[in-house]
Image 1 (cartoon, rainbow, N blue to C red):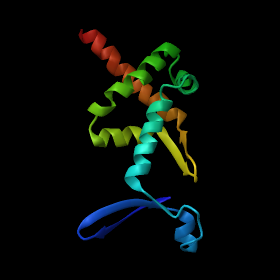
Image 2: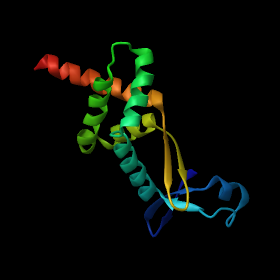
Image 3: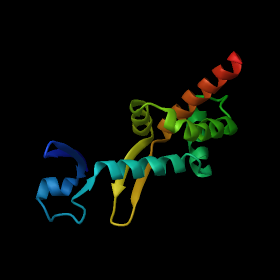
Image 4: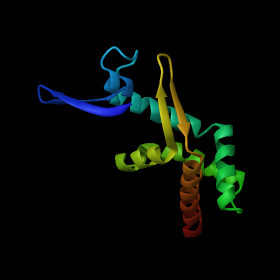
Length: 140
């Protein structure tokens, strides 16, 4: 899907349009367009939930461990888990950067939104969070 927008009566409406609709016209897809705010909120909610999932933490640790032998699975878990309570404190631009770092692809179906994460993005984010956490411990 591609981002798009329109203005009606001075109000901006953002949405995502199916590539099938763009290439073949209206009616070519069962999901022609979706409101941007709704799909973005659903993606953020799912990503925040996924960051607490043990299998995601292990996958991120395995990827991160390739680049940093000193990184333990517990450090990875702690780093990813601490992101959720901090989320609301992040500026919108930083929230967008984190989502772009983590999300590889979003597939929208009639009954679900499927998100594929970037393992390298997970390990990169966890490394950033771990270094912040280490710096805070040193400062204290």
